[in-house]
Image (cartoon, rainbow, N blue to C red; front, side, top):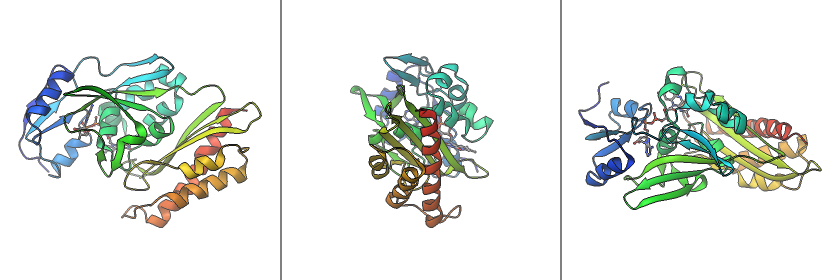
Length: 289
Ligand code: FAD
């Protein structure tokens, strides 16, 4: 399909991009990698009058370590995150997640900022972003603000971002000693989107007891979410098979899964239980105590 006609602008800075968005509140749309927006435009589910291409704005694709966190520029591609020696060393679960996204072409073009802003309910990053307690830096006409990952995802393809704000950076705390993390997904066989994906981050104390747990689930419902009841049930326990099974059951009970041509709601609930168990098992083993 061919999209409806649009005008293309390529701002040279974030300030220029936000000014353009402010001047055209209902007609302009940012584009970064274009791997979610352009398919929607081709299907005529989106038809912006102006496409504001931020992909060449300098300074938005760096990945660096600062103050106990990795700061990942919004334009960092999935491939860049997958291949980064820094991410692999400090936040391997994020590199592993990026490597599971789509195919080589998608990973070469798609960006972390675009993925989070798009809020596809089957996207991969939202699960580890929630489990790792990340923060999203955004710039709008009134300056900068930070959105906690838990406050970002509102509903299907809907975030708490304003239409004139640009994500500039994703700040992901580096887990401390005794912490293990894992992302496990059941992929759609063609697109590789998550039918269900679960990220788990657990911290064990020196006796091997769970001191904290965070679980992020994508693919199941209309938006990515945390499994707080399952998390709470793990804290203070030894992470043996019975505790992990119980957490999987609690996560499955709490979700409100959607059913579609790819998987029924019942099957997605089953997958949440199974993939929560798998993610927790690997995270606990990586925590290594
Ligand atoms: P774009 O398409 O450029 O933009 C998407 C939306 O985000 C638009 O609304 C745009 O206005 C907004 N936006 C972009 N950048 C910013 C910013 N910095 N600040 C504010 N708003 C912004 N994803 C997965 O997670 N897992 C998969 O397995 C997967 N498989 C895929 C398979 C195929 C065949 C395709 C085409 C896509 C797949 N994707 C998958 C989606 C892919 O990861 C997209 O690249 C990603 O979701 C969006 O990133 P983008 O940079 O391409 O965003």
